[in-house]
Image 1 (spheres, rainbow, N blue to C red):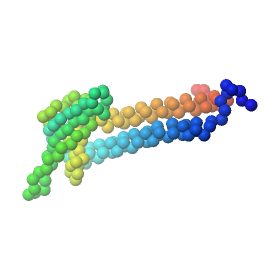
Image 2 (image 1 turned 90 degrees about the horizontal axis):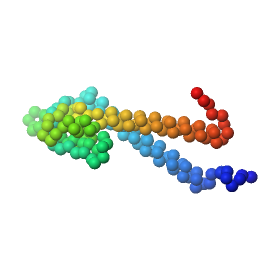
Image 3 (image 1 turned 45 degrees about the vertical axis):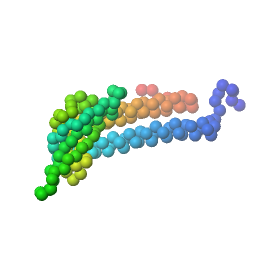
Image 4 (image 1 turned 180 degrees about the vertical axis):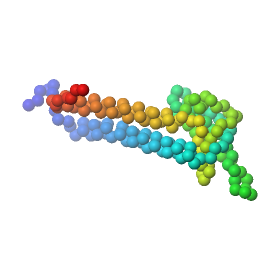
Amino acid sequence: MTSPLEPGPPTHTERAVAVVALAVPIVLLVGLHVMAARAWSRSRALAATGRAANAEVVERTAAGAPRSEGYSVTYRFHVPAAPGLAEREWLATRPVDRATHDATAAGATILIRYDPSDPSRSDIARNDHVTTVLVLTGTIDLALAGVAVHIVRSARRQAGGVERSR
């Protein structure tokens, strides 16, 4: 018989809460990794095969919070058309890091890279936003690994297992 101070086996509700508490962060983490992988892949593809062009900064915005995701730059660029056709103008807004945001001003000319087969896919050549996302993802991974180690050690202690020391 267990004493009133010792916890009994978990109830069905406690198990359900535990599963949800573990599942939600895992889903969010997987989503963050997918977002980072897509941004990295897009950035690499444009750097490798994209065409360089000058663009005019139309607007730059900054959110109230000092976060990298809070900055964006809107720019206009022209894509040469096939012979006999007029060139096309494209307008794009991209998230940028704070340094890129601070280095641009409305009316300034910046270097961009765009996909010649799909000019809607473009990015600012000097933009460390993808690096920021990758660093953030790596930092979260390290923090979660530390939490996982702590949980495993705590579970071993509670179960009366032997904890390995370094």
